[in-house]
Image (cartoon, rainbow, N blue to C red; front, side, top):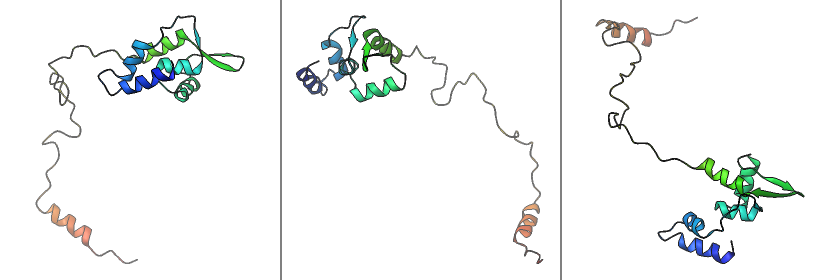
Length: 139
């Protein structure tokens, strides 16, 4: 992609057509046997050369080293795009509550059930306060 096409893509980014869609429409189609250098591969993906190098070093995109130079097969670019493609959501189930899950499945309550703990006597709070605020015994 030439510099002029890149500048045009950046200008169009503010309009209805996003930069990525612009690149998809105007970028040269790939043949599966093409070997791309880092700059061309980065342009096809719409990322910087540095981002592409990070992806390569992380093992997320396949590459070929020829004479110490890194090349990317077009099939590796297409496979990378396919692996990062997010499928749209399937239709939702209206029975599920949108705020807190499904009303059809009872939730598990933690702790003891209501009425299972002993109610303290009227004087227990008084006795507890006396224990807490009592002067400590000297050693």
